Structure formats: C-alpha cells, structure tokens
Length: 516
Image: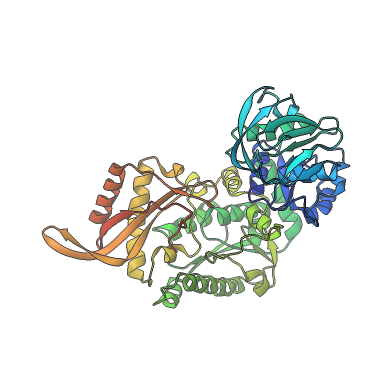
C-alpha cells in the first residue's frame, strides 16, 4: 500500500489546496469529511494526518471533532486553523472566542522556538507573512505542547508537542498568501513523517490499469468522448487496460470549434486505433435549439439531447456493462463535503449525468483520484499530443453558450472562424500556455461599419482571455494593445459578417468566465 496522508475536512473552502500541496511533494493524499474519518483511517492506514480549517466554532456545543483515534495512532498530526483548535480542545487545552483579537487576511508570525516543521525555512527571532482566518483562538495549550510562534492575535500561532509529533498552526500554510507554506507542509510529510515522496504518475498509471482490469474483467465498456482533456485521457487509459473491450462514442453536436471533430476522429481512430463511433447529430441539436435564447434552456436541451443520442448509439453497439466517466477528484470531494458545497446554482453543467441510471450500467471512473493538472500529467505519460493535453477548457454545450441569443448554423460558422483567428494569433505570440482559457463570443447585435467606401451592418464579437489556477476565480489577460489591434484587423478582414471587435476585461467574480 502506498504512503498516504489523510486530510480530515471540517468544511474549509481551501481544503483542496492542502491535498494539492501534499501531492506536489510527491506524496499521495486523500480528503475525507470528519464524519467519515474513522472508516478512512482503517481503509488507508495513513502515515500522517492533517486536520483542516472550517467555519464552525470549537466553543459551541455539537461542533465537529476529529476521531479520538487520530491522536492514538502514533502518526504525526498537523492541525490547521480549526484543526488546531479542535486538536487543542480535544487534548485538554482551552479555546475561547475573541472579539478583539480576530485575524482575517494577511498577518505576521514571530518565531519563538525551533521546530522540524520549519527547519531550513524559518529561524527563531524571524518574522514572516502568513494568511489568517479566525475569530476563536487557543488560550491554553494542552499538556506537552510548547509555543513555537506567535502573532498579534494568536498567542499560540504555532504550537507543537514534539514527543508525540503533534503540530498546530493558526494560519493557513496551503494558500499562496502564506509564501513559505508549501515548504512547511513539505517538512511535515518528509522530515517529520519520513515519507519518501514516491507517488508518481507512472505509478498511478500502473495502479489505475490494474484497477480497471480488476473491475471490468471481461466486460464491455462505453466511453463518452468529447475531445476534451478528461475524456481523452480516460479513453486512452481504458484502451491501454482493456483494448478491444472499449468502445468510444463521440457525439458531434455541431457546436465544436473549427476542425475539432475531424481532429478527434483522426487521433483516436488513426493514432490510437480505438473503436470509435462518430455520431454527427448537428442537425438534431441545432433544430432543437432553434429560437431558444435563454442560456439555462440551451444547456438543458443540449444535455437532454446528448443523453438521447448517446443512449441510442450505445444500444447499437450493444452489450456494454460499464459506462466510463471523466470524474475528477474535485467532483468527488464536492459530493461528500461536510459543508454541502455551494448553495446557489450559477449555471447548469453539461456532462453525462443521468446516463448511468438510464442505461443501467456500472460506472468506471479511473480519474477520480486526480486533480485537473494531474490529469494533464497523466495524458503526457500516456502519449497524448501536447496540444491535446494542454488544451484550454471547453464547455460541454460548446459554442451554444458563446452565442448569446438564438443560435443558427450561420452564427456558429461565423464564431468558429473568429475563434480560429483569435487562437491562431495567441499561439503565434507564444501566449497560449500562459492563459487559462481564451475564446470569442458572437454578440446578438449588429453594428454599422465602413469598408471600402461602403456601409456595412454586421455582427460584433467579444474576445475573452483569462488567467486562473482552478477556474474558481479568474482575471482578464493583459494583452498588449498592439496584439489586440492585430487580432481585430485579421478578424474583420478574414471573417465576412463581423465588423467590430471588443475585448472583455471583466474578472470572476463578478462575472463568470463564460458569457452564458
């Protein structure tokens, strides 16, 4: 069994970042909610445990607690923010609410004593920036703990029981606003827990293939292939594991980017020799979308039609026992989070949701342990082309949500041409990999223009490019004006029907990345 760090989640919004930081050190980590932690300990036999932050107050009754077993295993334990507070409270310390010493945002800690936790990073007497988010604070440490660092609002900002290898931080080392936080976490897993950091994508690939073969046996698997990173990696991984037992179904809804359908077919049939059913259902999708302007209706129509087409094509193949999905670890975490996830639906998501129940198949989800950036690493490990692995995210409904208002084939063709010019210029400028997502939007307005002494009355388009780490927040990419001018000139010259180009400089929030 591989070395594992178990992260017990108390509902922090940044718990996923802890897992990412640990994996970046080459050590496998898993997140479980506090109310399922005891079973996870039995299953994983972790070599170290981290207690996350959370919104609750230890000072109130019936608040979440770590299983007492955590402190009896003899493995290192690190408590972060709420994790520190519940650790101290459960081990005999005192936590009190504070109205005068709360800390939110940037703060500074002063190091009072040495510790393996910050060996080679911080020295006693030094002062360092961290990120705090607490109202309660520890006012009395449990027996055996010593203070290692203080802040203005936390007399025990860093405290440790070195004998039992229990460590606690009032601040969040996992966020970028704590500049040295990743180094502290690396010290915890390597120097304190003694883990080697041998979790590699090559090791994951081998393990995943073995797991697929064990689950599927001699059964048949259907995989929905969109051409995006996740479904492409799933398809190639499954093909490597079970070969001819896999059939991929590529539903072409007529709302892909220029040349994308042809690329998908050539890559998977030609290069990887994967059994692929290509269903050109563009007329069906565009017919159902005719006259529909509401973005939620568009998404629901596309999602329902996709299920119908996929189901029909799967029945033609016949005899499939499993349905493969590109479920990623953030999806898994969200579904089990003790905080229940977001309470407001900003927009519906289009995927193969609903298919497992309708088709009475068992799910195969070989990527469910991975984050998005790790899926890209696996794709490279499997030999997928660099331009496929590094492709910007593309929404399931495709160009439908980049055409505000009603959708026609004419508009979709116009947008494809605009988008192709825009992305070509970005690649030529060497900027593609610096941008999280870039695309064009065809606006539902016509504007007056002048071309060659003649009047035009054509569509306007908007260009969008954002930087982000996870898509949850984003900022616009600061193109030079000369670049934007060059792109606008090419679009207007090369795409008849468009006579005006704008650039969207809205961040997320308040906007979303996509327009609909």
